[in-house]
Length: 176
Image (tube, one colour):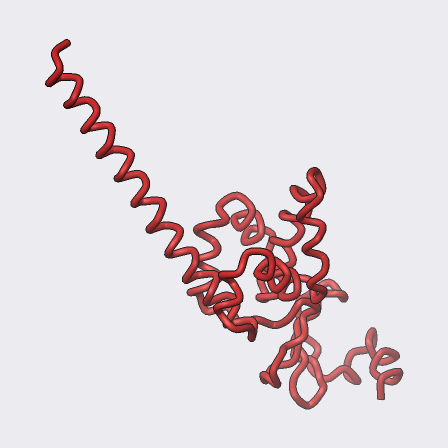
């Protein structure tokens, strides 16, 4: 091997490493924009997604409603489970409690973060409550099917008004 051949290999290796580095920087920049958008959809300022530990605190507050749960992320074995649970709760906070969406979010977090950020999903809160006085109420699934509470307090579902449903009449009377 001559000096010129060795130099050619070094140059090609440098070009390959530089190209890979630039691709990683581009992907990271897109994810920064996506996280910024997710924070803004949740009613937080987008710049909060840029500060390392504070962003995890805010993300826990967006996902769980309690920001201090981010401290679980610092415990070595617990952080793996915490990451999955936080992903599930983040999906639910944006109204995506379908199993398929959650599995895709766990398996392909970078792509699904873009989908969550730039898709038509709106933040409904960690407990299913809408924040900021948005119309539509909140989503609940405790009775086995999806239903939405309207602004007048009634649920939009297959039965119509709660007093018309014989299975929920007691529930209706209790909260009046």
